[in-house]
Every structure is written in C-alpha cells, then in structure tokens.
Image (cartoon, rainbow, N blue to C red):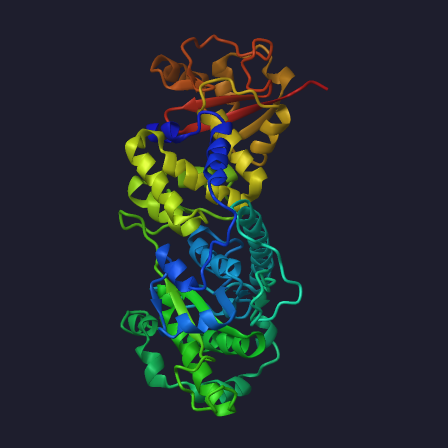
Length: 500
C-alpha cells in the first residue's frame, strides 16, 4: 500500500529526537493523584465499576489488584494490552498487582464472549503456554517500568511492601497461577465451600450463560461452572493477598460480580469483615470490580488483527518491525484513543500531538509517536531500534548507513530474509536475484515486472533486466542487504555472506 510507505520514518533518528523533545518539557513529578479510577476513566480505560465506594476505598489505602489471563495460546497479543495497561497504572500508583495465569482454569475455557465451546488443550500444551505467558508477564512489567522511568515515573520497588503500604515506592509484582490453590482441592471440598454460596438462578441469569443457552450448541456444565472458579480465584487472592480489586474486559462483568458476591457471602459466613460479619456492601473491606471497554476499531472491527492474523507480543511470533507497523497504520479516527489507552504520555501532551497532527496529517506524527511508544514498552529499546532500522531499510529511498551488525540484528529470524554466499550471487543479474530471493517464480516473470515498472531494488525502480547489483558499487545497504520489492508491499531481502 502507498500509505505504508508514506507512514515510515524517513530517518531512524527522527522519533528519538521527537520523544526527547517531548519529555524535556515534562517535569519529574508524581503523575498520579490518589484518584486512580479517575485517572483510568480519563484515559478511556473504564467501562463499569461494581460500586462507587471503590473511590473512597482506594483513597484510604493501597490494595491488591488482579487481572487474569487464560493460557490458550503461547503468547499474549495486543488485545491483552488494555488489561495489562490497567494493571500497570495501578502498579505505578502504588498498589500491589497480581497478574494471574489460569493454569487451572485454562484447562476448562471461559464461555464469556464465545459463541462456541473452546477445544480443550492437551496438558503439555497448556503447561508450555503457562510457562511462556508467565515469563512474558514478567518481561512486560520489567520493560514497562523502564519505559515509565524514562517518562518521569518513580519506579523504585519497596522490598518489604504490604498491601496497605502507603510509601511512594512501588510494591513488588507477584505473578500467581490458580493451579497452585486448585491442585490440592477436591471436588467435594469445592462444592461444600464454594458451591454452597452460589445461587443457580443468578448463575443462569449471567449474560455469558444466557447467550449460550439460547444458542443451538448450548453450554456444557464445564463452562457453566467457570464463573465459580473465577469467583473463588478472587476470594483466594482477597483472603491471602489483600486483593480487593479485580480488573477485566466488559465481557467479564458476570464473572467479576460472581467474585464480589462470593467474597461478601464468605466474609459474612466466616465473620472476617470489619462490619462484624454483616456483609455490608459499603464496608471499607469490600471487594470491587472494574471492567474495561472491549476495544474495536472505528470501523467496528475487532482490535488486534492484521490481515486476519493476531499481533503477538512475542517477538518470535510478531517481529518488532511488524508490531511497529501495525500501530503506524492506525487510522486517524483511532489514534488519539490508542495514545490514551496504550501509552503513559500525559493527556495534555497527547492533545498537543493530535493538534499538531491535524495541522499536517500527511506527516502521521501521532501514528509514529504511538508506534514508537508501544514498541519500546513491549520490546524495549533494542526492539524499538530493530523496528526503526527495518522500517528505514524497507521504506527509505536513500542507502541508509547502517552497520552489518545493526542490519543482522534488525532482520534476525525474519522469514523474508535469505542469506546467500557472495560467490553464489557474484555476476548475477537483478532478474536472477529476483528468482533467488523468491520475489519471482521465474526470470520471465521478473522481466515482465520490470517492463511494467513493478520490480524495485532498495526502493528504486529497476529499468534494466540485465543490471548486475554489486557490493563494489555500493548496491547493497550497509554492504550487506539488498531489498527486492514486487508491487506495493511484497518485500524480500538478500543478505550477502562474505566468502570464507
């Protein structure tokens, strides 16, 4: 697409200079008030809250906050960024966050928002997914703290933090797996301690259940019971980790309220609340839920897909370059909302960026800022640098001055890259290279493309089918890589390996 080429950075240093200029004007002060829910609302991160008393409860003390993810895939994707950002905001505001990996519930599957029952995962696949997502969560919050620190947030960790700690230092992040507490629990114990407090009429009335029961497929008892498992997760974390807030998408409302109701009933039954066991909903010891809006694009499409493919947070599944480009291609109608949702940029700075973007929309200033912020937060400085180098090489018209190591780092594991010994391509015409790189199936196809103006070498149109690119003439970027493009978006790269 022409727009893709127009969106790219002309030089790699532009975005870094832009960001430095932006943050030189931000004073290093506390960026959170005590009203964390208002902060989230101001950024479009709140759809509903279970009770308005959450405001006063969060102003009085720092609490535990959790959000769960079921390990249905080996990686999180950009659709998971909203709950991750919600947890990050609570973390930076001094609350103790508990990202939960559903090592137990992942074996069942949540029916919320699903029209059909999800296939069950093999135990080895589930275990591998749990390990990879747990590691990914650790990496996310580590990089997010680095990202936040550069943007004036205090990210010092309190080594002996407690849920009620009001220190300016941040509480340590604790990643939990619900298999740890379900592993030793039998079905009779669960029915006695949890099922006793559940009301079937209420469970049947939940939207996720009603929708499935009215469908042709119906709902299995396995999926029907999922809400009780998630409710017990909340109770366990409430009792053992001081967790009083659960975050989730708006499709999780039924599961979240099942948890707050179970906590209310169990507090009353066990006489552990500050209100003498009455279960008063306005007690400062109450549990709360916050739901995020389910994100769709301005055209109504589900956020997080590119040409039908998920955009993963794992760089082995979606390269930093492709990740960066996904956000660079954000439509004007969505970019302000995404800057609020997916970055830590101050609201006033986002407003300034949008105003500048409106003055010269052809520069795509807002999209470039969004892409750079999110890419650095997810993939770190090195990943962001990879994305910038790859963008400049693939879309830039000048022969960029990158070293061989920079180029190798930027395109490592890229399926579009083919490494060829210099001896193999020496003396080969551009049509030969088009076939070697798999840009074309035959020299005849390459010749036809050249005749029609559809074959490019380093983004320069090829006019002579007999032209021979050479290292000596500087035809390879950084003395290493040649970029072949057919049509508008089909890229292949040839990396030259020196003779040994």
